[in-house]
Image (cartoon, rainbow, N blue to C red; front, side, top):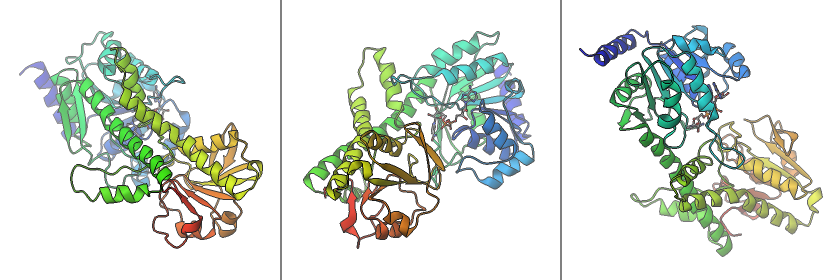
Length: 447
Ligand SMILES: NC(=O)c1ccc[n+]([C@@H]2O[C@H](COP(=O)([O-])OP(=O)(O)OC[C@H]3O[C@@H](n4cnc5c(N)ncnc54)[C@H](O)[C@@H]3O)[C@@H](O)[C@H]2O)c1
């Protein structure tokens, strides 16, 4: 039996005895669910983060990610199967390490992989024989091979022999009640076949299906394709919504009817713009990388531009309605419903609702308030604004305009439709309220 075969057998033994020790670096939307899943399956799991507040919360078994079951989290913390820490020296105890740190862009929209590099440095400082490292953060093709591997190889250990490295992008969709960490297949590409094989084995503990690919770069590019596919299709319907507004056709009815075609069509919906940590950012990661190869991703960038223009488009819709009611801009009160970047989550990152609010205030709007049960406070243009505690008839009536920016399921849409003077619905959230159409201005309807 060769060395790899022996090592694999030992990993299989550790898995079957639940002796494999897991490390997860970065305990956010991606990392914490992974850590909880391993711990819940009985594997001792170290969760690492540089954010002391998150570690303190976890030590108290306080959940900060909506999709994670509270009881599950309490169970793994109290049983000490999940150990949250800022002490990266514990990385040495881990057999398999997942890197789940953010990959934002800079002010100029260039990729910022500094969190990946810092996390990799910490792993290198604690590297030991037999460790399996899986990068999960979304990034441009080549990151694993050209940036992560050289840091780790710099040590006395050699890849595919002494340690194993792979890239496996995360597909979690916060707020999705059907597809979760376990039942969503994942793609995994190792530096060599040994890396793919052994890292897949480890990932298979919590994921039903691992799809192996030939290189990390395939998996890196595959993830960008998934997200850019969404960006491009959302841009298409956002453009169509603007055209429909101009010619007076209801874009939502167009999309619903087109989606009756059972093949060759997939519905996407317009809105006030895209946000979050993925779809908005990923096109820029690819565009940046393409430049190195004298290639301009024209189509992809155009889609990103159309999507990023939507908050400006919605701001103009609101200003137009304010002009119609004849109240001076500086005296107009607007209430935003939903500030998160998408429904049923508390994620505010790059939220288009926030952008629209900022644009309106820059134009001189008198007052912006919001109601979002998931987000207690926000900062608009450096000023703190607090979520209204409750939606009431009198409160809704006190605003000149109510804007539905995020269509959270918990909103009482009948109450909103019955008691708001003017509603700008950017999500078609009021589609089932047919008797109050006069005071509803729907994005993409052309009224
Ligand atoms: N949120 C999603 O829905 C989603 C889905 C698929 C992929 N992704 C990708 O996964 C990655 C992580 O995204 P997220 O949404 O979980 O981000 P997040 O901001 O929710 O969590 C990242 C965590 O990493 C921590 N961190 C930063 N630098 C660190 C370091 N050097 N060491 C340890 N911890 C560190 C942060 O404090 C934070 O808690 C990103 O690349 C993102 O594009 C996100």
